[in-house]
Structure formats: structure tokens, C-alpha cells
Amino acid sequence: MEILLYIGGLLFVLVGLGVSIALHELGHLVPAKLFGVHVGQYMIGFGPRLFSKKIGETEYGVKALPIGGFISMSGMYPPSPGDQGDDGGRSRSRGAFRTLIQDARAANDETIDPERASRVFYLLPVWKRVIVMFGGPFMNLVLAVVTFTVLLSGIGLQQGTTTIASVSECVLPAGSTQTSCSASDPVAPAAQAGVKPGDRIVSVDGKVVSTFAEASAIIQASPGKALPLVVERDGSRLTLQLTPVAAQRQEADANGRAVVDDKGNAVMHTVGYAGVGAQLAYVQQPLSAGFDQAMANTGSVVQLIGNLPVRLWDVGVSLVTGTPRDPNGPLSVIGVGRIAGEVAAADAPLLNRFAVLLSLMGSLNIALFVFNLIPLLPLDGGHIVVALWDGLKRAWAKVAGRPKPKPVDATRLVPLTIVVAALLVGMGGLLLVADLFNPVSIG
Image 1 (cartoon, rainbow, N blue to C red):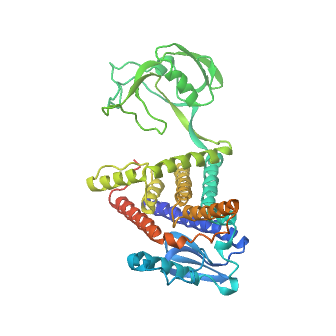
Image 2 (image 1 turned 90 degrees about the vertical axis):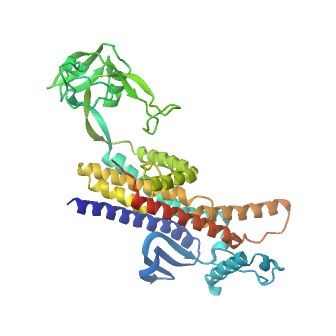
Image 3 (image 1 turned 60 degrees about the vertical axis):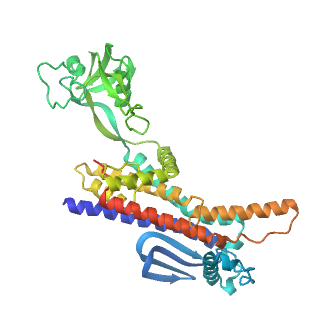
């Protein structure tokens, strides 16, 4: 059964990734067709074609490797100049690069049908080209917002309620490995006050609370202080006296990671401790929570990409040394699939597992949204930059009273594009090997 659940988690990711890719390419396809561009192909995946069907002037199909997708638009770049064979001798000094550029131009020219010469991408106004190229990443953002909204507003966010689930019998020393109380251990404040499992906290120190987090914050801020604690038990309200004891707690940052000092030692601070545990429940959040979560994830992914070289170096070091990887670091599709399989097969309530899988898919779409907007060819962000540069040149020529410049020939950037593509392949290969031989552990 565990194996079937693991496979189910993998399939969930594969299907979710397929939907994400399909919608991404649809985000390019729809505005391209609305703006009159001839689109020859709409393909999900790369490699050998599994099946396809031509509808109208466009061939729709699926290929064997589900690692991306593409649409084939006519005239992504201007056609080759008529004097391309005469380069003033520059081809002798830059033969390899010149060949790459000419090959790219030839491939681009093949997409331009003389009968549809006016329906090419490069002739679109700048704002339309930006919309076409931004449409793909935008669909991933929309899918992420919808996913997070379903998760947070439909299912809810798992939170501690004001109903007590457990009461500790004693206070154990910090860092203790004891699993049971001894006669010498002091009685926990909640047990001493008479708190019982099933009690519902109404107020702490005169402040009405609606979540366990609110009650906990008051208790933690009051070590050694006697607090009136109002609880509801069997339909009646009781007022108890709770005096939290001072306890050492490790400090954590906004991301939940332990804070350490310059010497690597954990930073501790004193808090009040009562010895109670809360019942967990899914609490539905406002509809805006999905968008807020998507924006928070976007910020995290932007930060990760900004530190990508360092993160990849850390992945390589962990792969060689066998040390645990950063769970917040980059992953390949294999890594995401492994985590999904582990979550699906975990010993936890079905709703909890499904919620984590939804969160995983939302985060994956945010990663696709941000990564595709990196301003480098062959990514969508690179095409957007080319379009904006073309518009800037035209605007400057108009202001300066100069003749309208020729369209920007992005095929000149093919050598750089190949370098970027090679780096992306290398990054993918590193993450793939790391996810196979030193995967991220979710504990």
C-alpha cells in the first residue's frame, strides 16, 4: 500500500507539471492567435512525438519528455538580411559564432510563410509582443494563486485551536531526552493549575483569545507571573490561576530556521512555559490569503535565484561529501517527485497529505513563473527584454527625428543564448544527480 501511495504522489506531480506546462504554453498561444500571429505548433514536452492532431493551421501534440513545452510562431525574429553572405571578412575571425547565427536565421526563415508574411511575431507592436511572451509565466502565477486559494480558503490553514489536547505532567530540563516524569521533576504549571485535556481557553490574563497562538504569546511573555486563566469545561466556565515557569527556548528567524551566534552556538531566550498542547484544526482563511501566499513565495524564489550560484555550489558540496542538503534549496523535477511520493506515503491524515501536495504544486508554479522571467534568452524574460529594447530604439529615433530603425535582430544573441542554455542543462544535470544520490530529506 505504501508503494502505491508513493507512486500516487509521483503521478500527482507529473500530472500537475503537465497541466502547468500546458497552461504556460496556452498563455503564449491565446494572445498570439488573438493578435493574428501564425502559430504552427503547440507542443507539450520535447523529444519524439507521441501523438499530434492538426486543428486549423496549428498542430497540437504531446512529446515523450515532459520537461517543458513550446509553441512555434512565425517570424520570431526579422528575416535574414539580403547581404548576409557579405560580412566584410568577419566570418573568418568569428566562424563558429557566425555559423550559429546563420543557422538560427535559416531556422527562423523557415517559419515565415510568404503567404502569411504579415502575420509574423516580430512585426507586432512592442506591447503585444510583451503580452505574448509574458502570457506563459502569467498563467503559472494564476495557477499558483488558484492553488493556494483552494488550499488556504477551501481547505484551510492548520492551526492550534483554543481546545487543549494534552497537559504535561512535569517540567523537563532543557535538552532533556526523558520521555517520562520522575518524582524529582517539578509539576508543570498547567497541571498544577488544574487544566485538563478538552478544556477550551476563553481568556488569559483578562485578554480574550481566539487561537492557541494568541494564548501562547501571552504565556510566553509572562514567566513567573500569576495569570488568571478562564477555561470552558463541560459547558461551564472556570477561572484557574496559571503561573508559567521560566524556560529557555531557541530563537528562530522569520523562516523558522534556528538563529546562531558568530561561533555557531544557538541563540536562546527566556520564555514562559505552561506545559499544554493544542488540538489542531484547519481554519479557513480569507480569499486574499491565496494571493498573499503566492506573493510571499515569489519573494522567496526571487531570493533563491539571486543566490543561485551559491546554492548550486552548496548542492555540489553536499553531493560530494554526503552532508544533508538545504531543504529550501533548488530541486529538479525528480526531487519534487520524490518529496511528493514521501508525502503521499507518510503516516498522516489524508487531508494533511493532500494539503502538502497542493502547497508543493503552488510553489512549483511560482518557481516556473519567476524562473521564466529571468531576462536572458532563451527564457521568456529574454524575449521580453528584446521587445522592450526594440521599442526603446524606435522611441529614441522618433524623439531624435531619425529614420525608423530596423527591428532588433535577436539572432545575433544566439551564441549567448547557447551559453545560457548550456548552463541551464548543467544546472539541471547537477540537481538531477543530487536528487538521485543525495536527495533532500523532509524528515
